[in-house]
Length: 527
Image 1 (cartoon, helix red, strand yellow):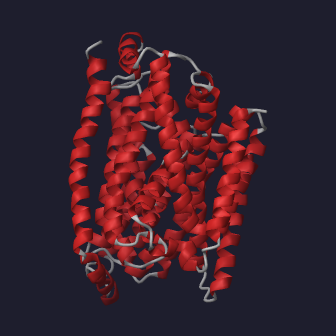
Image 2: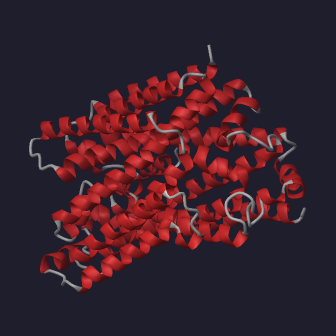
Image 3: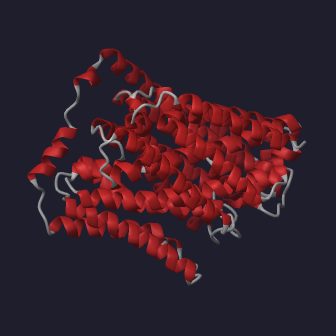
């Protein structure tokens, strides 16, 4: 029997069993929605990283790095990890302080606006469904490639797995399984990339060879024949999407909602720092590893399959099976996060259900319905993992970023300004994306839908604010966010957080050294 199929079946059964076991402890919507608000730092880190590092990293980013835009994507990666720290310090801890169940609920409470709550919920559902679509397509592609099963059957099997896991255990189960999966795919990724590079004569040998034979793969400008014709345009694109992904890591619902589950605000800050470090480690290993695989396979029919090709051709079969199982885990972890957010948002932000048992039944039904909708979308649409993933990221950045920042740090922005900003950003970005796609336009980088959507958001926010005034209730809600609870003044917790901040400075220096030693110096010295 196919060893890759065996590994995947075993892992999926294991996740379902874990979900049922954890589900026995889910007694209320507080457990299902926000894991009882008792999540320690390490579970938050695991979930933050796992919900980010899905199939988009292993298929989309890896494929694009292999094809020729490794450097722009590394610049993007360096920018996005800053979003974790900024998000935790300047948004996440206030979100946790609000004691809300969802981010749309936070918006509605902060601005005393049911309309804004509903709008935020709608934009959240749209972006998460889009993102979930890219994830399920990646999982289906992975399973079909290594098992030989039909792609559509693979989608159904994967959907059953993460739907059962989410329905049975909610956010509590998602946090625990995310952390388990994070450990699995991180360790196996590092091992596989090391073995591949050793097989090619060593990391430095491959970098030196590519610097001479295919210098565009690791150059700062990227391949001029792939994305944009000049290095400057490629870097402008990377800078723009660096802001997009920084925004995602700051405020996207599948990231910032993890902070609602934290046991305290110190856990929020500490987890954001460690998540930034581990995400960058994975970004560098996967993207640079994929670029270096040009040494073994200069051409590949579908570039997004490069990590799978390496797992099935360059390492022992048993290790390759564990690797693809790890990638499957990355996809499932993201999918469970998305589904739990959808279910929670539907019940919490659209309905006013008082009965606890009815709430739990409704949220589980919402998860099942969402899973079926995404399955149908994936079933009848060809896989486009990288670009669908970027569409979801762009829309959420344009819709939410300015409003999230204003909700904490602006005394002047009103509920009307926040509503108009979010609506205009959503329509501006989404509308431009759809128009460019339908008209088959090749837009210049400065007319990217991200820039259009962000500008529309800011214009809408400014106009809406100028036409209205801040109400006493809005002012009161904002002031309440700056009242530090006594429980957050614990001396031990403060010391732990200070040590983590100090560690982040050291880790920053380590990251810089790694980039210089393992990429910049060996590459530039051999041009």
